[in-house]
Image 1: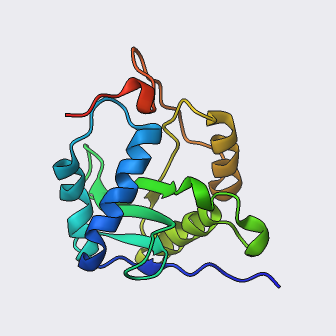
Image 2 (image 1 turned 60 degrees about the vertical axis):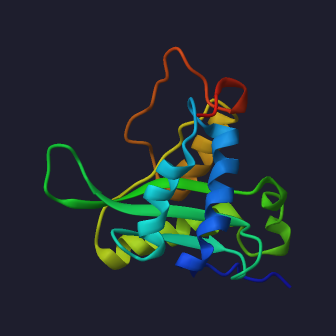
Length: 167
């Protein structure tokens, strides 16, 4: 029998584990160098539920299997609030667990993000910025969110650990 993955809200106690997962995400999809302090400046307020939140799959004080960082933001031309996905990442060892669950980790995080946007009555901006398995990721997001509203282009850089340098 399949079971549902459980998502919990991240708390300040999750800071180190979320940072470790974020660094793994950077290794896979990062553009240029990494600054862990800057990552924490985006993550930490959300762990206190200040202008955002972190949805986590994984037990408290245990290994985080997957997470999504959602922050409140505004477009450069508007005072209206929106929900912006800053990062969504499933640890590689948990990407093939779908058969055990009704939905896989990534689908569960996407559905959670939509539910948060619905609960807050805010638009959600979420997307794919990657040079690796891009078409498959876009197709997955189209199945979750509908047709894309544009595209990203990278000039003179690729995503991923082969193309980044640490600070």
